Every structure is written in C-alpha cells, then in structure tokens.
Image (cartoon, rainbow, N blue to C red; front, side, top):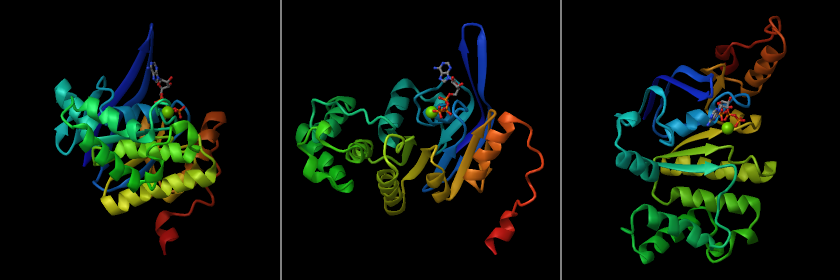
Amino acid sequence: MIRIRGMHKSYSTGKVVTDVLRGVDLDIDDGEFISIIGPSGSGKSTLLHAVGGLDSDYKGSIEVDGSDLAKLSDAQLSAYRNETVGFVFQSFYLLPHLTCLENIALPAMFKRGGELDEAAANARAKDVLEQVDLLEKADALPTMLSGGQRQRIAIARALFNKPKIILCDEPTGNLDSKTGAAILDLFRTLNEKDGITVLVVTHDPGIAASTARKILVADGALTEVEDADKALRHDDADDADDADNDDNNDAPSEEART
Ligand SMILES: Nc1ncnc2c1ncn2[C@@H]1O[C@H](COP(=O)(O)OP(=O)(O)OP(=O)(O)O)[C@@H](O)[C@H]1O
Ligand SMILES: [Mg+2]
C-alpha cells in the first residue's frame, strides 16, 4: 500500500517559492484504481513523480509497502522505479528507429545492467506485447502504428518488470475519445486481472467518473470527491468568483446510493 503523510512540495525559481502541495495525506490500498484530477498547475504530475520515485526533494513521507521512499539509497530507489512502478505518459516516448519489440526489450536490458540476456528480454517483451494484444506488431517501427497502438506499446514497456503500481500521467491526452476509452479498458483489465494498482492523472471527466476513487488536487490540498465533473466546475467557479449559492441541489452521497 501507498501511505503519504504530511507531504509538502515547493519549487524555488530564483527568489520565488511556489508551495505546490502543502502537507498532504493519502492512503492507497493495493489493487485500487484511482483518478487524480485538478486544474492545470495544481500539482498532479508533481504528486505522481514523487510517488514514482522520480523526485525525492519534498518534506513529509511517502511509504510504499512500509518503506519510506525518501530514506532509500540511490540504488534502492532506482530498483523501486524499475521494478515496483511502471510509468505511462501522454507522449509515448518510443524510439523511432527501434522496433516495438526492441523499444520494450532494450531499455530493460540496459536498466538491469545486462543481467537479463537478449533471449530472455525478447521472450518477456513478447509476453507483454501479447498482454496488450499487439504481438503482431513486434517487428514494426512505432511510426507505422496508430496513436492508440503506440500507447499500448508504451504500456507493454511499463509492464515489462511486472510492476505492482502503474502511474499514468494523461495517458489518453493525445488520443481521440474512442481510442482513449480502449486504453482505459486495458488499464482496467490489468487492474482487475493482475491486481495492479493504477493511478491515472486525467483531465477527462469521463475517465474520472469511471474510477471508484477520485482525488482532486487543488490549492495545495488533496480532496476525495464523489463527482469529478462537479468538483472541477466548482474549482473553476472558485477561481473566477466566489460562487457560494450553487449548493442547493447537492445530493448527499448516502441518498445517491439508495
Ligand atoms: N521543475 C519545476 N520548477 C519550477 N516549478 C515547477 C516545476 N515543475 C512544476 N512546477 C510548478 O509546480 C506547479 C505544479 O506543476 P505540475 O506539473 O505538478 O501541475 P499539473 O497539475 O500536473 O498541471 P497540468 O495539468 O498542466 O499537467 C506549477 O505551478 C508548475 O509551474
Ligand atoms: Mg501534469
């Protein structure tokens, strides 16, 4: 499980200090599927990077299965990034001159310091290509693939080391809504069948609405919300003006469930 306590992240540029996350707490159980929403610049990527061990420069703690990421050695943190988490980004970051199979197998061979031989890496790459249903594209170049297919190759690459957690930053941001929905289905299958914990940063209200838990990042805080669409509208309203009196038709969540 992931346990975030009193996490505070600020960026300093010159003399300007921006407090992006101001002492946030969050618990995520194994096997959860969570969307992270919030206005641009609110700190969603910042949160994801810290959970993924890409950034250790924050106050407070992020524990994953009981170990505090900030206390890991560089070698341990790099093992955590390579083996426990998988990353999927909006831009697919596939190398254009390598085949799909090579895009998946080669980084893994380098990352593991050559401990995995080529045959083993290729075999594992084929397994994950099959998982995303693109084995027939093993020898194709990424440039020959559609956007949705490219993202599935990037997901296969993220699956290579059998991560417990997949962190996605706007994974459907470059895709049309139908292709985006298919990518989301793939994440859902990985979550349900393989028990992978999925955290997905999204601006898409449809994606947010489809996940059991939704976390709003806004004004340095994390808030659990029921209705992602409404939470984002509220946030816009708060930015523009103080909209106090639009709460009349709020349905309490207990009522909504009966
Ligand atoms: N390396 C950096 N140096 C300085 N400021 C940064 C840096 N990275 C992010 N910030 C600032 O921190 C804040 C949060 O950035 P972050 O990228 O986490 O936002 P976000 O919620 O992911 O936004 P978006 O939806 O646009 O991707 C922003 O104000 C941003 O300008
Ligand atoms: Mg971002």
